[in-house]
Every structure is written in C-alpha cells, then in structure tokens.
Length: 147
Image (cartoon, rainbow, N blue to C red; front, side, top):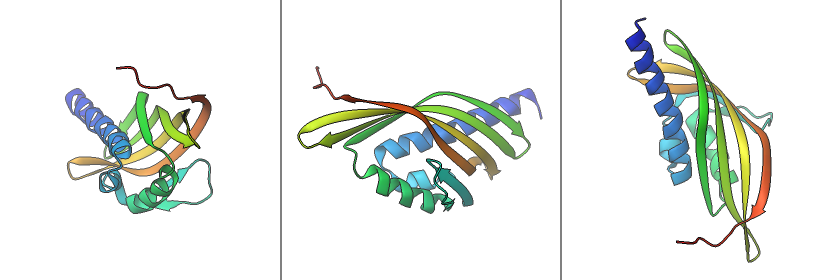
C-alpha cells in the first residue's frame, strides 16, 4: 500500500470514530448505527453482554443515555494500524455527562478507552469489534453558563 493510500485510510478511519462521537452527542441513533458493520460485536463498560450490530449498540446506548440532559464526547488521541481491509484503532475519549439530582445539576467526566477493529466495506471504514472501557471519572456540580 502506498503512503498516500495509508494516509487516506487513516483519515477515513478517524472520520468514522469522530462521526460516531458526533452522532452520539446529537442522539442521532441511525447515525450511530451506521458506524458499525451489520455483524459487529461490541462490549461496553466491561459488561458480559455482546451487543450485535449497530442496532444492538444503539439500544444499549439509548437506554443508558436517557438519564442525561446532555453529553459531550471529545476524542483526545488515537493510534491506528492498517492491514489491508482491516484496521485496529486504540482511542481515548473524554465524556462529559450532564445530569440532574433533584434541582441540582451535576457533570460526570469520564475517561474512556475504545479498542476497535474496523473493516473496509466499499468506500467506508466501519467498526466491526468494539471494547468500550471506562478508565476513571470524577463528578462535580455544574456551574451556570456565563455568556
């Protein structure tokens, strides 16, 4: 593979990861599902259940994120290894999750490691295997927005 083709693949893979995060924060569930292969298998939060396909991921995420008033998932870095039509991606994300406890608003900030195997399908790279691994978190009161 040429150096140029490798760079193009890495940009396309990063775009898939960024699309997933943007769709997640927008609660665009069909967009989230579109980032996965039809036969993908994913595990979130070290739970034993294997989520099947993008629809399985969406069902799990939708039930977990319903309690939040808003989310922001920011990609901090990723490492990619491309081998033909398969790629390994190890990425780090900081998730900020706004929620309410009675009248109080709070923000949980969580570091997440994603270990993904992606496959090229046509002109797109899609997540085929995912491990979502929370690393640590902290929780603080939310401050009023000052604009």
